Image (cartoon, rainbow, N blue to C red; front, side, top):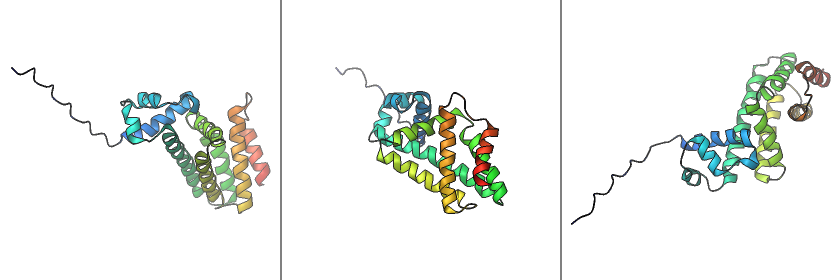
Length: 187
């Protein structure tokens, strides 16, 4: 006699966007728990996929962190490109920089926390430092549309300092103070 018929195989789920969802989920977990609290299990949970998807798509946690931070940095760099690309002269470029800092970079926890986490993680990981270097180069390139190379580099550092100061301060600068700092340097 034969035993019970084998259970029909569950069809494989076709999910071409899973890898991208995992990267987005990694950014969400980084924002919620920090790099130290980011695990394969937490990312898979946030993406609502089986844990095995993590090892299928990524060789290690470090790889997904690099890709997640790269995606974050590229999105921020696109905002620089858009804001400064729309500026028609130096005065409108100064306004674009003020808007970048006070609204785009400091506007939401969703963007601010991963930025700070990237800075901290990059201090220890050369691959993540390369992500920050590429981001800074692209930011400076956008700034160089309106400012000389030296000013663009210094302004990029000022922007990063304003972001970090505001992120870490219990008394962050107001939009008016941010405007004053940028105008003081550029005018």
